Length: 503
Image (cartoon, rainbow, N blue to C red; front, top):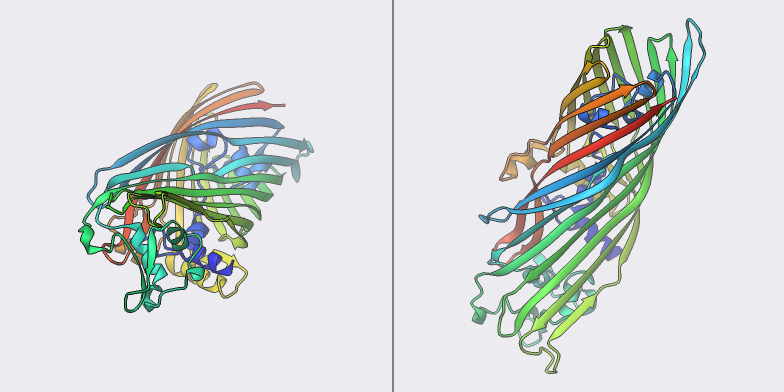
């Protein structure tokens, strides 16, 4: 089991500088994007100094104290994700998908003291806000002069050591599947004895072959926020939130090669890696209104402490033109038992500053700045495995600043809104310089419209997000091209509608 966990957490994926899988997971589970209500989404989440919106329970809890009455609202959302994938000089391979979820649902209760000074009101709020969405599909369908099978042979032959492993020491999730389905074999007659496959056989004159990989992600992060806030003299607003985060992250792929040798015709390798769990954090914040025109906000989020379970399942199928075991069988299939692991992750601290200008009933302009040090994320416990994992995180990632700005223009009962947000890249400068593309982070543009009358309101928002390009490591072929990596980029179109009731 320890060997499986070690290989799982140290397999190289996604990044040019060979950050291990665990570092990638730590970064992804630490990222948060604008979520919540349609009003907040249409202004790119720039609500830290404004408050009075359910989304602020997960950003600046002081926003709950701005409420003057009670409220219930919910926000269904529909997302359309597009992915562009390239490998070497191949054309773009485009894949689309649609997903429905709830971006927000929540309830606010306000108790008013009706005093002239001091505590004007105390507000309790509870809400669910979607913080991140992982859902995306991609595929590559081209011809290559390398093979995933060569990685299996390299591993079986001991890698850099060159000392072949006994068959009972082969990784049951990877090269052992290839061995059990006859895709790789052991040559006792060579000097020294080694593992081999059809690709290494020069008689096949192997130069290229059809290769197809479909890959995808599912899941996301949602937070259940329980907040308490107080309005002091209509000038200072304070609040605190206890957050419970729900996490599901699923990564899967199907890899198919069709060399059509006289011996091996084709093979299919499948992998599914699932992380599920939950976490807790604490947030506190303040909003200060020196004059009616200006509002200033600040908030701090403790690290989220996650309790996570992971599960890895792999399988392999092979088809031969000539039976490898001198029997009538030409098709072989093996599935390894799922390996399970429990671990803890601590995300980074988050610090937020915000400011807004509110011009009476005419409109407002708001901006937020958020500081996050992704290199501070840590896996627990600090053991022989945890220490190198955390070193990968510290060496591969850095601190970054996320900027959000939004505006609202009011025309009576109708409001028009717009916003822009930039999420800085968490990768270190040397990592970006080594990439064959420029990683400028993630940028989001948004707009929307709202209607308010009496005790009812409805808001609609559209958000366009272009995520940073990233490397997806498919396999490593030491005998040919080395590491084979595709370049992927997601874009997302999101439509959200909030329906709310005040009472």
